Every structure is written in C-alpha cells, then in structure tokens.
Length: 315
Image 1 (tube, helix red, strand yellow):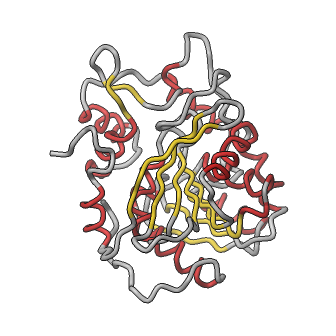
Image 2 (cartoon, one colour):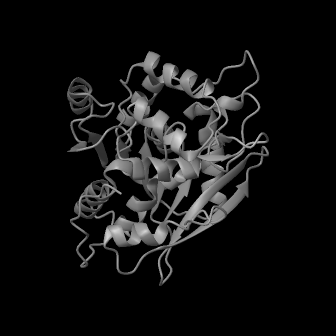
C-alpha cells in the first residue's frame, strides 16, 4: 500500500519498470516569483550531482509527475515544473493560463531554481508554453521537444477541454477517477490512470476527492483561459535550435496536422509512438528513447553507454 503522504512512494516501482540501475533522486521544491506566484517543481538529481539539463512542462489538467518515468529513463538531471494553476503551484486570480501570461513566471522560477540553458520538453499546453519560453529567452533553450501538440490543433477543441475540466465534479474514490478517465477515452491502462489520479487529486473539505488544478474550483459564472495555441507558430518558426515532435498514433496530432507541421518546420524531426495524447504516461520509455537519440545526435545530451530498457513502457 502506497503512503498517501509520500508523493514519491511509487518511484521504486517506476525504476524497476524502467530497467534503470542508477536512478535519479527526486525532491520537491517551491519558489515564489516577484509578482507573488508560487511555482512548485520536482528536481531530478543524479547520484553524482550535476546541473539540470532538461526542463519538463506538462499539459492541461495534469502535473509534473506525468513525466516521472520518462525523466528516470532519460537519466539526465532535470526539473519538472507544475504549471501555474496546476499541481502544487498557486492559482491565478484571473484564471488566465495562456502561455503568454504564464511564461514570465515560469522563466522566473527557472532562474530561482538555477536551471542553466538546456532542453525544454513540453506536452500539450506545456508544448505551447515551451515555444513561448524559447521566444522570450532564446539563450535558455538549446533544443525543444514538443509532445503530441501542434499549434494547428483546433482552438475549439482546446477550449472544450478547458470547459470540461471546469465542469468536473468531485469523486468518491480513486476508482471513480479512473472510471471517468476510461469513459472519456483518456486511456485504457488502469494502472497508469490510477497513478495519475493519485497525483492530480486531493481530499476536499467534504471528504470527497477534488482535482489539485484550478479549473473545477472557479466561482460560478467564471471561466478560465488557456490562450490561442496558433499563436505559437511565430515562436516556433523563429527558433534557431533543433526541434523534435513526438506524437501519439492515437493522439491529438492527426496525420493531417503531422503533415502540416512537417511542411512549416521541415528541419524538425518527427517521431510517432503507439499512444494516445499523454505520450509521457502511456509510452514513457519510447518517449525517453526518442529524446535521448535525438539529443545525442544533435550534441545536446552526452552519449550514454548504458543501454536503456527495451520494455514496453506501459507503466
């Protein structure tokens, strides 16, 4: 039985599933920005130390823990940020979580955490945010990895997802969280979904489980904003660093969006893996292998003589 008070209690199982022999060590850190926003992060440290080489940015409605197994498998010191309004980071009074709005706070947090220039890996909303970070502080980003997101993803679908998160009712149990996720076709691996449920919910005042993120807690009549994803195109097209897109074959980057992305960014590398939208949760080892191979090919990561696990990565 996992200790509900230990957010890292499930890491030993992830280490075993990943075939890692010298795992990174995880710790929780909190920093406060100049405008009063608190940003929470998970720091992944190597046993022999070393500066963080990768920043992981999760997607809408989840948290930094979604990258746990990928971070372990890549094996590079890193930080994984809880985006504003998510996880253990503070909520914004205006409920505006557009990349243009949150990027300055995330950059300030990276400064406070003393994260040097390196790779930025962003999933979904985190991918759009990563492009904005690279535009605002190009000296910070040596390479960009987008996980299952293209700026051409339909804005009406983005807004519909945000409205669905706002309308989400409390849960009576973790099993109910998983049942609803299966029904919504978020995924079909109940073990993966149960782990996500543990990390993205907390006990509410009435004894039921509620999401940690801000969206279902907005006052009646209020809505959130996650910005226009298409605004990321100028940011991406202006970049002068290697770009990798890792898409799920059943994810949000359809074959049509895949082709459009390749046409607009012909220099980018595109890898497709078997997964739905949350590639880092459903195919974490495949994502890690793609990041390592691409990073090493571009000289962004040191070559690792220890082969990664070839397991299925469905944990």
